[in-house]
Image (cartoon, rainbow, N blue to C red; front, side):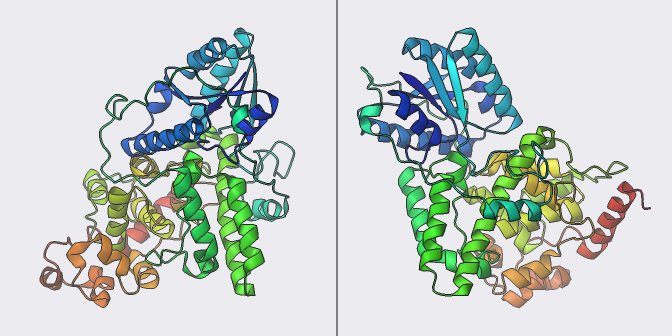
Amino acid sequence: MIVHWHRNDLRGADNRGLARAARADRVVPLFVLDPTILEHASPIRVACLREALADLRGWYRDRGADLLVRRGAASDVVPAVAAERDAPRVVWNEDYSGLAAERDEAVRTALEESGIDHESVTDGLHHEPGSISPNEGDHYSVFSYFWKKWRDREKADPEPEPDADALAALETEADPIPSLAELGFDEPDAAPPTVSRDAARDRLETFRSDAIYRYADERDVPAAGSTSRLSTHLKWGTIGPREVYAETERALEDAASDGDRESVVAFRRQLAFREFYVHVLAFNPETVTEDFGGYENALEWRNDPEELAAWKASETGYPIVDAGMRQLRTEGWVHNRVRMLVASFLTKDLLVDWREGYDWYRRHLADHETASDVAGWQWASSTGADAQPYFRVFNPTKQCREYDPDATYVRKYVPELEDVPAARIHEWPDLTPEERAELAPDYPDPIVDHASRREAAIGAFERARGEA
């Protein structure tokens, strides 16, 4: 027997660790609800996790096996299950956050003390950290250099799912998956997305057959619906990265024009961004709480509690910012262009420390991945790897006019503005209080003046750089 320890790889197909184990011996699949990891979780993510676990358990049961779901410290549970099943070896897929690395090292130590062999496999990435680097064992901190190598590096084919006879049958049905309440979580504010193998495959195939060819032109338009929406499935591993890349190969084969092919490549570039951020985090785990790119002096964050509260409550008076924050609360997901705008507004217009925004999003996103979210917030706040220049401050009014010209996205999430003409929505910060009260009495006035706050932010960054 071999134990395959599932973590964020909740699928049977295109699972390199599971396939490796199944080629060697019969597999006992295990998932551990570790309290140390759950301390950093949130209701919506635990709800997604439970659904993905139930779906994976159904996959195993359809094949005469079962998924063991145990609670406790992984360093205790994993060796105990291996001993219980007389398994001399445990296999798992690598995870790269600092928290995961600490957990995995504790498990390795416990297994070695018990005389149990172990192996970890690169699965969630095409190329493991350190394999795309300017120097052996290092990493790129500028994406364009990383991308040039990533796009030309050969990609492995998807792994086939193991045969049923490679999975160990359990004599009795495994314990039920604990409820949210039993795990210490309330019901999430947002309705969790469907996180299952079928949902992941359906979304991937639908995207590949249509929207991928509009991706380059429409990916920044939040109302267009032309993004893949695969982030939650990649986060939980209900879809594998090799499967996604293989579909881009099919899309290139079916492309009808150079524009179609360029659009597919534009989507691949986002897949590379995801890996770039994991590579950066793997070598710099401290960036979860510390700036990647330091300044000579400390940044003078304002951290005004009332302004932060207005941002969280979607009451900034900047329509596209509030729309994004409401999408977060209702869906547990936010369009990427809007994520950038919301983050820029918090860290530049309000001069609130990026860690406040990261923590709020971490608690509300169904697709939260440490590497991507830390990188995104540090990019917007001009403190991270390959971040936007400190003097680039998104104008939320201009961005709303450019990417939501008909105010379709804004009206969907801010019903107070449903009957307001798009032109007036785009002018909202420039209207008089009387005009705003007449158009939408229930929607707030802007809490800050963008132009003056832009200058204040640039000044704060220049002082941090020692230039003022």
